Image (cartoon, helix red, strand yellow):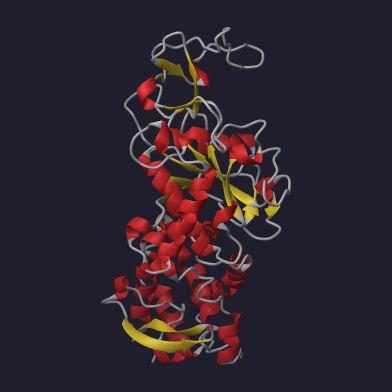
Length: 432
C-alpha cells in the first residue's frame, strides 16, 4: 500500500476540481489519518476516513473495517491518484452540493462542509486551518513526513468520529430526502457567538415579504434570495426557503453559532428568553397574513395596502378592511387562502397565504436533516412557530403552514401537529 509521503507527492501535481483547495484538503487528510499513522491509511490507503457509499463504485473497493467508533464498511484505495479521485467523488455527493462556490476560498470551503454536517466538532474548522501552513510547506518544499510520531491509536482518537463527519443515515437516504441547500457566498449574516448548548431546535417564520417579482417574469427564487440579502443589511442570521423549496444559506452559515431572528421571545417549554441563542430561524418566503378589503374576494398583503406614513401600519376601516394601494400588486382571492374565524392552537384569527407544497416539504426535510446532523442536541419537539415564542407580537407561521394539497382551513397544521409529524417522520427514517 502507498505511504503518506507517496500521497504528498501525488497531491502536488494531481489534477483536481479546485486547485486552490490543494493545501486545505491535504490538511484534512493529515488530521483524518494522523499524518498517515492510522491503520486505515496504512493498510487500506484511505487517508480521509471515507466510508463506503454506492457512488464510490469504480473509485474504491468496499472493505469491512473496525474503527475506534465501530465496525463498518469503508473504502480501500490502491494508489494515491485513486484516493485523490475518490475523495473528490465523495465530496461530489448531493449532501455537499454547492461546494464549487468556494473553489477559491479554503475557509469558505471548510465552513460550507461544516454547514452540511461534515463535522459536528465546533473546533473542526480551526483544527484544519491550523494545519494549512504545514500542508503548504509539504506541497511546496517536497518535505517527506511519514508520521508525526503519533501511534495509530492516537491518530484514530484525534480524528472526529464518523458520526461527527455526518457519514451516517444521510448517506443511506435517497437524494430526494436531502434538503436542497443553496449557499449565496456573497451574503454574510451576523453571528454573535456560539450557542450555549449547541443547536437545540428551530423557529418557523414567514418573511412577510414579496414572493413575486415586481418586474419581469415570475421567479420562484426571487423572494427568498431578497430576504437573505435583507437579513445581512439588518444584522440578522437565518436561512430562507423559496417557493420552489430551495433552502438559501448565507456564505458564513454556522448552525452552532447564533444570530438574531426571533427578537424578544420566550420558549414555551423551557421558559428561557431570547430564543435566537438556542434555535435557528427559517424564513419561509410568503406574505403570510393578508388583510380583507371592501371587495369580499380580494385580500391584500401589508406591502400593497394603504399605510400610515409615519409608522407604516396598515390603515383599516371600521370593518377591519384595508384599502388596496397597488391594484397591480400581489393580491389574493379568497379561494387561495386559509381563513380562520376562530383561533386554533397557535393559529390566530385571520387570512393566510399558504406555503407552497415544496416549502412544506423543505421544512420537513431540513428539520430531519438537522436532527440527523446534530443528533445529541437538536430536538424535533423544540421546533416552534414564531407565534409560539412571541405570541403577543407575531402571527407567523399561523395558517400559512399546512399539509400539501388544498389551501382550505382543514389542511392547515398547527405547530403541535407539525412537531408530531416530524417525530413520526423521524421514527420512520430510523427503519431505512
